[in-house]
Image (cartoon, rainbow, N blue to C red; front, side, top):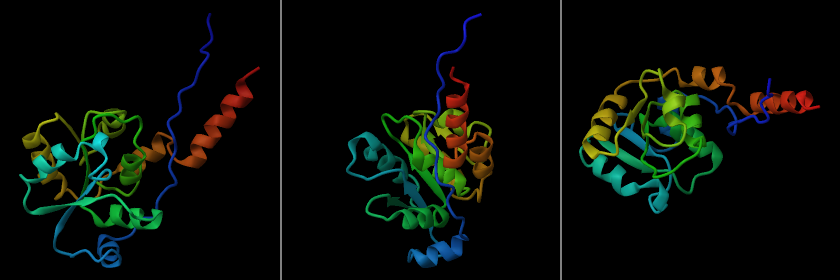
Length: 178
């Protein structure tokens, strides 16, 4: 019987702090009554496909798209707690850290089918994987921004995607090699 000669481990994340939406919005100077969608990257990063995100968000006038650029780590954490959803429209990804971090904050995810996002969000209510089509993305954003908190953090923990759990997996692999 042939032994498996490889292990595939995605990068882990530092488990982010969870703040109430009100506290996070106050800290980030965001309006308490407005709907905010966090774009999973910088608008000028071509691989993130901002033009598709903009086309979708033009169909969701009640929400504002926030660019994830120029923030310190703590501010990104705060933004993920302040937002109503995260939107990913990238052409390519591997195992996107931003989506894992957003899920760990309970943020609803709307994404195209890229990297391992489909597998990661599968079965997590409030998370949507869509075709690369503005109307479908917009419809999912419209639902997501009214969803509330998801069980994404539970999924991240179940999958062992925190840095400490990934490190434990690496140690286990090292110890198993003869």
